[in-house]
Structures are given as C-alpha cells and as structure tokens.
Length: 115
Image (cartoon, rainbow, N blue to C red):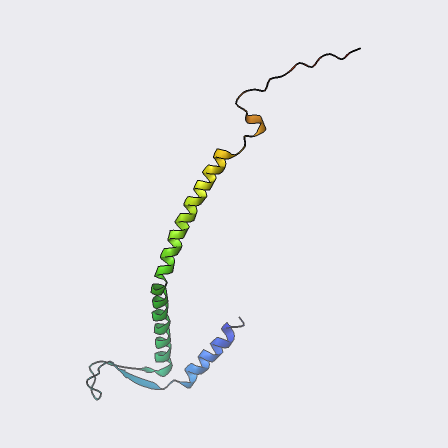
C-alpha cells in the first residue's frame, strides 16, 4: 500500500494532465495523408510505449541469461549425481548397527558363585 497508492496518484495525475489527443502515423512516406494513422490521448500512448518497453526489456534479459540457465541446469545434474554417489559410498562403508550382525554372538556360561 505504501508504494501502490502514491504510484496510483501519480499515474492519475499524469493521465489528467495529458488528455489532449495526438495523431500517431505509421506511414513514413506521407505525412499529410498517411496510409494508417491513429488518434488517441497522449497518456494512452505513453502507457502503451512504457508497457512495450518493459516487455521488450524482459525478453532481452531472458535471452541474455540463457547461458547462465544452461550452466545452472548442468551443475544441478552434476550435484545430483554426486549426491547419489556419496549416498552409495556411505551405505557401503557405514558401520553395521549392533543388532544386525550376520552371525549370532557366542554366549559364554557364567560360572556359579563360589560359596
């Protein structure tokens, strides 16, 4: 709320201050009679361009991080393989629990007390 409310106030103030209509032409060859032109409020144009810039920047950053994501996947696979190998070594060389001996222990008879 500390960020959203002031940001909303600034956005509304910008939209109210820039309500005049502008004509955007998509024809670079004819400025007097463009093949395709669009008339819309200035704040709408600014917001559309801002959103487009954020999307293009996000895609560019995502593409630029491809090498790091690939390296992270490879290293994750190596770590998983090393953990499996370590678990196997621990099971192989772990001391046997006291009750899991393969042969029963030899019991010796206790001599009767001397009287």
